[in-house]
Length: 430
Image (cartoon, rainbow, N blue to C red; front, side, top):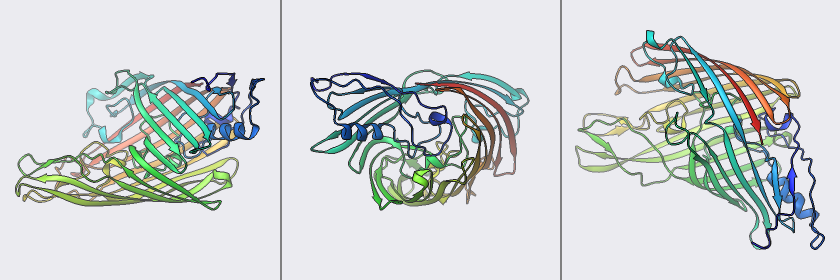
């Protein structure tokens, strides 16, 4: 502990553009004042490498915190601790067939529309974030990063309490801990105020052991072993859920250009989901798979395109609109067998930057469950999500935004429901 002497606090003055102006992987300009020890001069090379790692912005979701405002350095400039996050307050007003959720989840839109649910006013601050990031250089293990992030969603939505979102260690090319799944390409998800996001996006957190290898200047590959998470629709007399016995195996191949501002990624997923056949009194495994093509393209200083398309079977836990609703496995026949339904997710969006600190965006997304004939007529068939928004940074570290959301849900029996919502937010980053 003696070596970790807090010699100075770096107050980061980041341009309005950098914290939330763009969802692209922009490099952050750091303006700082570092107080050096007279006894031990800081190595400029070590300090530069540590600072670069601290403010690395690649692969982040639009709602992820950006650069920390407060930074502590040890006396040799080899280890830095950043503390940051943001306070965020959102206000929403639901119109005509609201999604009965604090977030805009199209899967929860009532079908048919209910007359007593025509409008709803909400305010929420639970998506505020706090994170700690430790980066450093060690002569034995090389460069390393330790990251912990939480929000205030608690266990149940509507009840404030600290909740762990990410906690991982990065060492050399390995990452171990909890973070965005390797199958996700969160940088390719269009910006929204809505915490849920587009219905057809691939978005999931997972505990993992991940390996990433850069290949040359533009290519990278990643492989991972991840903790499986799945929900089933079961019949009480024919089948049942059991503990998973095989990890999920995601991977991706990515090509990027413009210093990481644009990329295209092909992702793959292999799953082996376990269940109990109550008729044969035996445990079974269903082999599942999925593939995704995703990316973002910075067409010009003003235009950025986002796109995602996924297809496969048994990967509902990774699809935004299907996660948690029992669609990873569904009953096949009355012999106790279960099957993995096919699904498709599509998302496309565009962002237009008017000037520094002001941008507009719009996107469309659809999630569709296929070969679902063994489900009830009232079961989810597909949902659509449309959003248009504007974000403005009136002064450093503060951002305001407003957006319009439209969604619909269609059931297997062709019943449908629609919902509209207006969101507004104010957010201060630190």
